[in-house]
Image 1 (cartoon, rainbow, N blue to C red):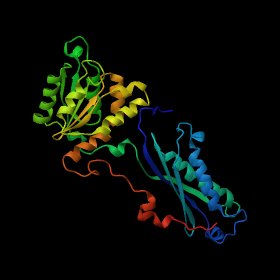
Image 2: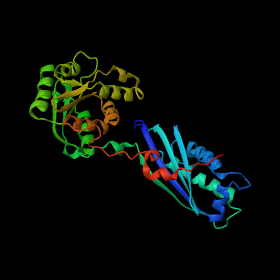
Image 3: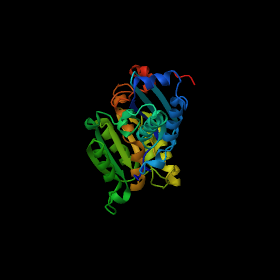
Image 4: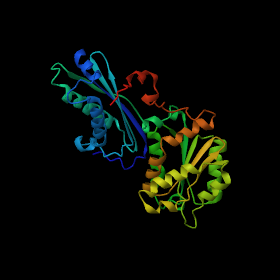
Length: 328
């Protein structure tokens, strides 16, 4: 089973469709309510809902998911039945398997109730039509064009008494996300030095994003947040809040972090903790969605720069024909 403990919760949506071919006579029996066992469609709908909620019990590598919504629509054609299933959940992993399982079970339920009338009946397809809400939705198209810098704030690393781990971890992760890290530097826990370096990167280097690591705690030399307070043109509290919330679910002392985030000019500056474990967790919490800030700073709208969400099929005109008004 894949480890998803590092992921953040987002709204996940998947739409799956199953198609069952049947004789025109059988379709007519359904429409005319002439099936002895009763109308198969409401039974199939309940079966689909149950299947979506219990997918992890029958598909070994699926995670148990707190399903928030299951929608089931039927289309009765001349010689086929289509079943569209939408599943929604706010969770760490996608719901495509829940939607596919639900559509499959709905088709099997209909087959079971009608097989006596039509030996040629066949489930011909089960397919995923769309999904969204995962990490790929928040990757911005312009990531490779972004110029980043990393500042390690540490007396011991600056003095050569300790090797940097956290800063290099940030560099590696940013490059994995497609950014170009043009500057990596180490400074002591000294306010004037931190301030001059940040000013240089923002005002003269015009970096898109600058990450600092270290100096955000409660120690007597932890002064990075104080420098940030003086430098920022605009603070973005939600970034630091999101990082602390994510960290607090994994390590109770995350609440002690005083990290800040905000904008100077067109440069986004984000403080990360000093420990490598905390840095990794914070990056997991923020990337890639925090990169959406950069296009906005350059005047783009909130929808610019990242993968476009596909619409929910209920609002999509191409799916309107799939709604079957079935009285039961």
